[in-house]
Image 1 (tube, helix red, strand yellow):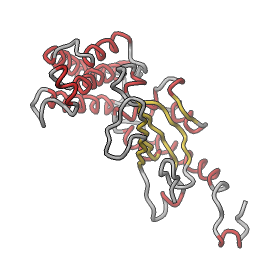
Image 2 (tube, helix red, strand yellow; image 1 turned 90 degrees about the vertical axis):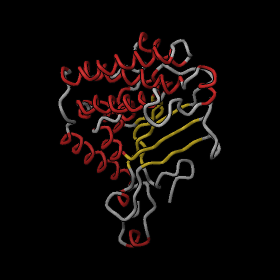
Image 3 (cartoon, helix red, strand yellow; image 1 turned 180 degrees about the horizontal axis):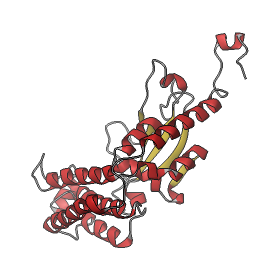
Image 4 (cartoon, rainbow, N blue to C red; image 1 turned 180 degrees about the vertical axis):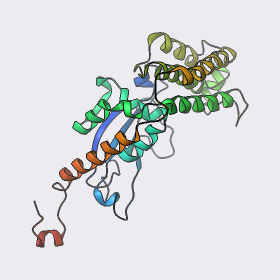
Length: 272
């Protein structure tokens, strides 16, 4: 049975929910952006060691089939296990909840705080490789070398000649990838000088040629940082596994007392 508001499995525990996307990056443009949030949840025991399965739920306030716009909410909820798996591989989006400022946190319990405090266990050169991979793929598409040139926003293409929001993501990935590889930290919002460049792209102040040129420079910087940065080669899987085991057991001990007991449990005295 699922929660009607978010379609989460009944009895799930949300440990962290935060604003992500352009709002938290500091690169949002008025009248262009919706509100993106990500949440992490621990699913009930029978979804982990039973026949049921759940990993991700998407909740949108915009009607089905309608693109989200200003004022709309896009909330993506991942199981903590899925989040940790992707974060350990360096997925750029998954790093965001680990670095968001306090004012971007919508909901957070003790386990969420512990996850943030232990974020270094996810950081490795794999993160840099992931940032670089996403950046290169998007840059190739913007340049027309892969799957079309202009992105998916015809209004921006008509106004500026290319999808400036899509292009802004490329520059952002470059700056953030370099910062993460060289410092082990992700500034959210982005550093003012980096925000300025991304916003210049998004508002059409940079030409496509200038954008691609800067993207190429950032790509080279990011490649160099993979060899010279301070981060380890791989994420600390032992630490991640230890955290997951303890987090799930602690959450289940709480959730057990929240769920309605089954008839068999009532007979055997398991009711609370």
